[in-house]
Image (cartoon, rainbow, N blue to C red):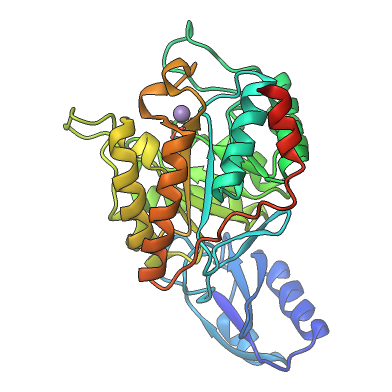
Length: 356
Ligand code: PEP
Ligand code: MN
């Protein structure tokens, strides 16, 4: 159920509504939209009667929420959520944000060099896994905290906020210390303990769709995070497992308009995992922009053939630069923007020369 407050209602009236709801056994989530403030009542509502709220000061009206994903659905918040991920980068507005970087952080020089190339091409967020969920326990598992330190150094040099995966509840504090965005991987979409844990921290979260996750399940997993108080969530389509073997996964482009319609949260497209082959990444990246994605996350490496993970689906920095130009043109065609790179402030050129 939601209680919609009048536009001129006071803080005291809002507090009174929340207090009354809590007394009746409901959990409350105030949502401050551009046009109105509403209070979502969730949890056990058996003791809650709508009439009580209809008569309270400052209340415009009450409504039942039909959808199961109450906090992440559009009923409660018709406006898009815009997430500030730091250093002036906002995801969910008219500007489409391109996040890019290697699958894994491999060394300090690798991540710094890649970060500079990404910034030069107009990428706005640096990706890189320090804790890697690998299919085989004998494959490279990531550099762990050392990798997080290198990411932080790359952010220091380029100003790019960083996104990196957190795999376990125990690692949430350490990863939150370094990351600007916490990534929940496909394999952990329904790890409810982990979802509750990232819901309790105040870092934006990008939740990836599980390989066999339905979109309604993805939304309910996001709901776990929101119901713990963290509303800064992005939903990521990264391909699903189907009977098709020509690609690593089947990139479900449908997910983008479906999620945009049912949720106010920003939608991110991952055409790298979505296809599994670098030659298909550009096509699906462009399609994602056309379909309404708010951000893209793309695997990029200075030498993709030598990447320690996901090399086959990783594009070179040169191809990334070309792709950015095409993406800008597609964005314009759908009335969105992708910023041109800012080059002047890049004290990082000296850094790049030092590496060369
Ligand atoms: C990744 O982003 O490198 C990754 C492991 O993704 P996913 O969880 O989608 O497989
Ligand atoms: Mn990967």
